[in-house]
Length: 186
Image (cartoon, rainbow, N blue to C red):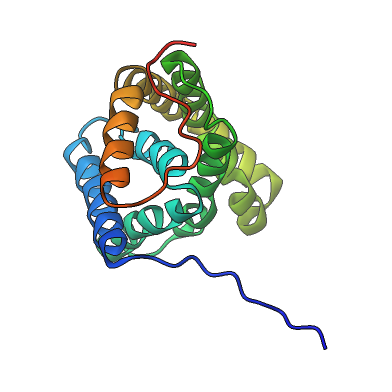
């Protein structure tokens, strides 16, 4: 007889608290920066969550997404938020051994630049080819701002925040996947 074991991500109570706080802090930081169109700390935080927490990154990411839904309701963007942050998290997780801040800045900047393109599949499904392309092209200036903001934030903050989160998580008894040292040099 073949038994199928379900693989579940088990969380300690301290992780539940930490991930809730981090998701809430990510949302709060985005709201504080809302006056700056498409310049936000969410991309930076998603990369950090993926690198430091591995698969458990989904928890603070979706706490953030849930808070977006609670405050802003639902729309087309809501569907994008179900997958778009996971694209960045997967890319960051795959590159988790990278230690140089320029690499993280490039990844984050490219994500910001491609944000509209990553949203296009939903637009294509809803409105067809012309709608998706028109919406993407009309938003390129926002993607450029998103790229610049992400690049600068990751360049300045990724390495020190990674060190801080890893130290915090290890101090709580968590294991950090891909901890290869974060001295900022290769």
